Length: 238
Image 1: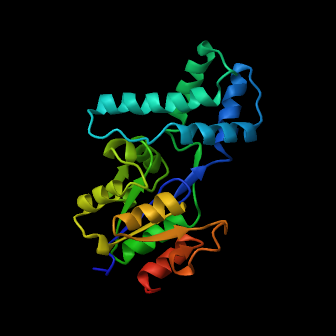
Image 2 (image 1 turned 120 degrees about the vertical axis):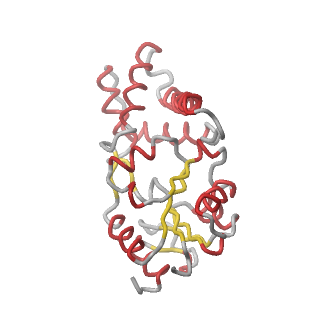
């Protein structure tokens, strides 16, 4: 078994991303309701609404209660994005469409380096998981994109009751895998949520910097691709 027994991945920005942008997707469907808004304006409104909602984290609930809480959380986000732009009668159907759309693989794309990296890790004997500030739809998304089978556990904040950078979500992953923090790696694209959060749980963390935005970071904890991550974790032996 490899020295680092498990590798945990962030989802959005690491394994997958929205095709185009959230603003483009929202805008395309808003036009069906007679509303034309610039995608960049919607992107900015979404970022503000998402940050303002607080953690997407609810803890131990029945499946139906969890689904209702997740849906309500996202409704508040979409409501804020379109506040003053859509009537209540328009907002409900638009939200229903968007919520179901992002459950499917259609608006998502997997980064080109993901599948080769997952296969490399698997062939080298690493156990893989996901730790994401997402809701229970993520498993459906990963399945629809054809990569769910690579992951032994998918830990989402909504079900865990803690969201990154809270170390509790990482400790939950360690518990599920039954390993110590010294036997785990985590990779993600945000310095605070992924790197600081994982380090808070004693996990070795690596920042995925696909676009070179964090060149000031220590090169020993930063990679530009998941190919580089494989080389770092396996020592280039896989």
